[in-house]
Length: 330
Image (cartoon, rainbow, N blue to C red; front, side, top):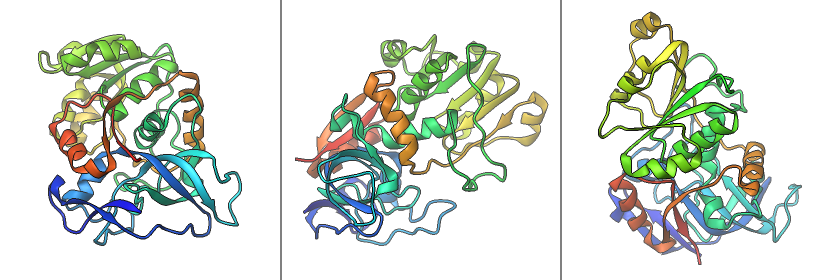
């Protein structure tokens, strides 16, 4: 089969299209003929040199096939697997947070527990864009869904109950996680403040954002106040400024670790909590039902053939992504 492999770490040019053996499904696995692959930040972290994820024993050995998000058709099923049959359309986030997803390929051996039946109402491209980004928003905002300790904090992450009396600010609202978060928070009845660059305003308004802040023209902390929850999908040192948008008792959920001062958070009476997304077929099935009815939708920034994975990573590096980048497999 054709697959994208990296033999060394570096820029997008280290991604090579090669012929490799087709995998065989092991116990608890199905073989998926891949139709589309979602591109995610861990893919370029791995390419760039990250060799292990915090809180896991999984380490990357080269050569490696990157990728975690797939949508495709079941081609074979291990004898001990129930619930899936040859010919079923499926999608999933594979083996995350390990680096063993191996999704940039024409076939992948996937744990059945990481998969859900693909919603019939969307195509493979849109389904491939959903797993990691959608489950990240789900596990931060709706239900954590696992008891694994966080590598980032001692206490267990707990989502904030959302409803008509809550205001949620989403920073990086137009990106993969962000655009799912906007929709899930709106579905719960919350008032949503979306922060992104100005070109994304029509897109985010269409998804249900009640207020839009163009961070290239305004400082969000000067325009948003008394917020119950901030979901920051950008992170980094600038994340700290969003603490001052919160009301006392509010919470900041950074998807990527930032820099926070314990004294400042205590003085403001707010909390900071984060977790790490994990593969979860049952949660993905719940999200799939929302995708099937159109209650939640996947936005596609751009698509590239599998062989052009390098171009997809170059697109990601340019930033200002609206939705998801997806690789298509002939």
